[in-house]
Image (cartoon, rainbow over all chains, first blue to last red; front, side):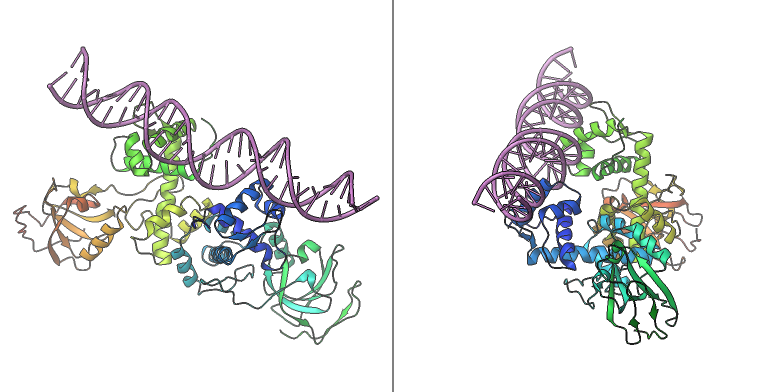
Length: 254
Length: 254
DNA sequence: CCTATTATTTCGGTATACCTAAATAATCAA
DNA sequence: TTGATTATTTAGGTATACCGAAATAATAGG
């Protein structure tokens, strides 16, 4: 357990390890880490040894990798930086939400703690970024209701989109053309497995009485959307999961 | 003349070479460059070879170093980045002007062209930074009246501060306590050499009739201040350069 | 003009963060 | 349970950007 000389590479490793376990619990393996970082497996082996030396991860050879409390703290700090930066770029510099990821990726290693806190203050200390992802506070605590991934919800569930994966700008633009965005309300008509596409019904956010009709989303899209305020809709019964004929006169605001 | 793979080190070298010639004309030597970058002479020799390979500098062994047009373009781009960032940090994130330098130093290597132009637009395309230094436009052109360094002006000259060296945060704070800042108007009472201190008389910016009295500045301070709109003041005659008794009833706005 | 000093470059070496290819451990399937 | 396949690590090598020490060029003084 040596010093805390966190290079930008080390920050990336820790961030990716954390990201893997943020919405699911099995720990990351060496090869998955390599793929996500875009480096060779051998580079990961070396680097993980270094992370272990610095007390940022627990790792036995040939086993998956876990963050230590210290590593988790660093990861949360990086996540905070990234998400605050994304929020700032969108709100203050007019970035579109599909442009922010790469810029934030660079900046998160370069900005000072002072910069981060100034930004947070100017934004009114937001708790979620433009994709709906939670922003930890300076102490690393997250205050946000839990979300459920769309492709893990059964038919008949309703909710509003609280989080959209930001890893594919293409996808973000696609969703925009479909009229799907943060806080869009929807009802799940189909259910997993989604190999053949997931049917959802959109509720127009502006006018909750208006039913935008069924829409088929590929499983890749379904795996990129998260819902909060999830529940079986009181006024809605799913008649036919595959056909998509759904009766509902009245959609209450959630 | 290889590719244009400009690392952040290369950017720093080019920036420092440019900075040395920005307000004076003799070219920089290897050892001065080493000192300013805080690296060993041997590191400079190696790196300058690389800069030459990339067509950024002209250099014969054992001679001073000159930027090529290509190197100058890169330097101006970096200067633009740095000064826009400083301006932005002060105007949008409430930084004090003695805090901005180090932050900008990091950020200038990390931000995208898109970020720079968004910032410039949001700031209304400023032509000078909080220290009064000129900000080149996107094409590398500078549009700003020339300045004169205080320790190079004779007694009896007037002008307003248009530029303050940003290399010593300590100094910036010191000037602040003296009430000296950008656009402060002043009359030079003493003259170089400044070994014994430079006498100046401040004109209060708020009330141009008010004479703040003589003030003695060390030569280090005098070498950090630049004046624009310089001229012999019409209503002012310097009676006694060393004693500091100066008669003047009426100071016109410049 | 030639020596002494100073400036600059060259020559091994170091650390970080990668790579490919070879070796080894773990897992799955017959 | 073993043999094949897959996952992971080790070994040897590259590029960048540093360093100190030794060698060499330039300059300044007698």
